[in-house]
Length: 88
Image (cartoon, rainbow, N blue to C red; front, side, top):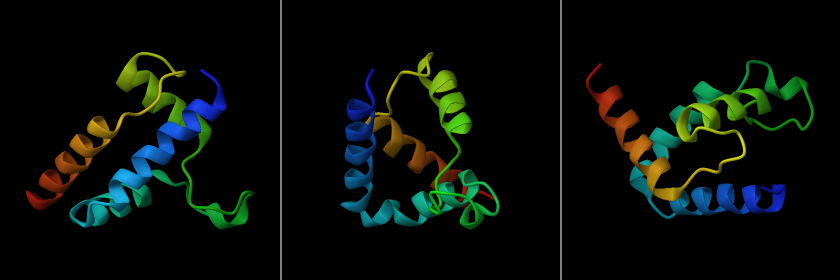
């Protein structure tokens, strides 16, 4: 899969979450858990998870690192995170 297709998949997921305010807190929580400490010290100076972590997550979720996330899967995961954190 080329990087343009993968980028569009991530963009679709981001738009889907942005259009659903009820998912915002869970999304920020997940992002905070995924980004490496000191992200502001390394280029591209954005709070993004490392490539190795994303590769690992794609491998464990979809069975291959060339896979891309789907909107329903991400929304389901964010619902699970919200429920899990509420039960703590």
